[in-house]
Length: 308
Image: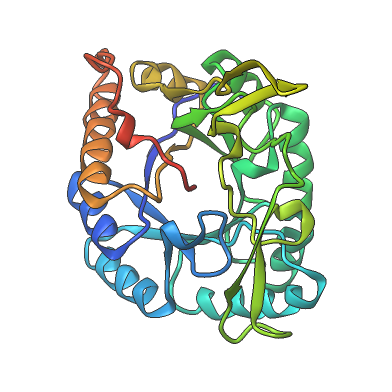
């Protein structure tokens, strides 16, 4: 498949609240992604209730924009059938697709709802054309890659897959690669209400690899101290950096990227507006064939997302 710029590249903005959704639409987002309460890795910081989701869908439809819904936890065996029914219900509301990172749930949704686009989340940890081939065979319609991949690497993937390629062009890179956590056993034992869910209607928040909701508590970003025999040998925090590939938008488009995604469902509405507007202007410049200037200074720290 030849390298090419997509005819209609999509700027996909985050929305963790109805106010953030309105801000993203006003800033020029082509589409939104939101979390369904109780079923996304963002946790309570960036999820919508069913009624809020319906309201956001109505507002997006009024603007001619699309909404994707993240259900990117790994459900317990007792929850899987329930979540599949929930996705089927949400699909009737007019969502443009769902975002998941449980391969079993992905294939189940594709079998049950073959016309519903399913995106394999950045939590799937995809990095190569072989990963793309795997998820394409599983029934995904789109696959998310991190901004650590250079446009040249994306171009190679483009030549090997018919999937939509989505790159998270604004994100946080911790000392781990987003989607491939080295601390999967960390669990916070605080049961949270999960209305209408099977069992006792509660779930332990924690590692998505251990049956929790998959909420990230960012232990990698907390200060640490190494002690031995009562003596402190060292302290600090693990490194992290904010990646913002604004200046590389023309190269990503030439490589064949279909969707440009911004991280930040935990951001307040004003930050979502500013972030989306900056990338809207950059994308428009790239589509006109103009160079895109890098941000004059690093994006403010409070724009960094702690939820997905």
